[in-house]
Image (cartoon, rainbow over the protein chains, first blue to last red):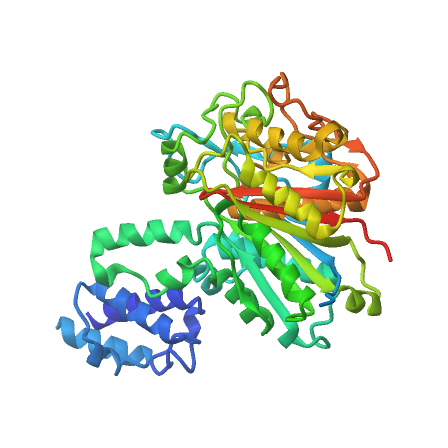
Length: 79
Length: 414
């Protein structure tokens, strides 16, 4: 499950941020490492919601700063 | 108060006739045709299935993927043409004071494709389906904003929006910004990307657009008696305007001088031209007055000439009223016959055509005049470019809402 979540999350990040897949490591920070601005991070959260058919409250979204954060959060929600 | 002189020192053109100003000019004087079938969506149920389009446009040649995703085509076209114009001007961006660079690049509509896509997404996914990039990709002023962000230009920055007169109004306002000392340089012009499903549908519903699907290349035929509406176009036209002394000091190439403009309103109807042409007459006479020139000094008019049954006659009549006996000595044209009607870019793209006519001493043709409408009885430079020393050229641009703008260009002399 987690493997599946991870690959889907990575695919979204590669697509939306236009970064190379090799840069999308678990500890990569969206803003500091992957060049996302505030609008990009909003869009990423929206894409995660769409992909996994769930709703991510703003207070949860604020704590999703890295690729690993996103995978852990989404895996938890889906299990 | 004394004002400063304003010259054009850089040109960028991203058009259906060519992706650079030199290619655009070569297309114009050779009578090239930029109209082709629309292939990027299914046109089966559309009354019009063609448009003047940028040939094989591929955004990935100009922008990386992330950049491209944040830019509607309306901004992409303008950024490409601005890049060319800045390079063409040979301005040293490391040396000039960027606080003194204005950007006035407008669009009549804004990010039309973005608006459509995000509306679809809203209907499919509800409020959470709307992208955070929706608003910044949609708003017309984002184009000037994007150009300033890319180059660090911090002078006056906004845009006028006046439908198909947009490009012209922005050039006029940029001229003022330099004339009155608010800026020393300006990136000025217009851009449009309306060849979308909703764009073609809307203009078809207005009954404004040609439906000559069996012969799209002859559909844009201003002043011909069989014209049946305009042909939609896309692209961007950009000028680098510069204060004369600055241009002389750095030995810049000067394409020509802007001598003045006339802005006015029809105050008549939202889409139809005033058959009396009072607003257009006012724009042209005010432009001549502002420029301090006599009607008989005008050599060339790049007309609005959209190829609509009403518009071409009304505009031709206004030229006869303003110029009297001299009207028939003017080489008029409508280059929309080749590059289509690019809406908010039209006043800019066609001002480039008018200015280059001065610079090269040659007037591009109006193509597709097979049987000239007897009600349109001026010299439209039919079908073949004409070699002519052009000292003064006008460009007319009129927009839905009844907005009129005439710009006056003159060959540069001390």
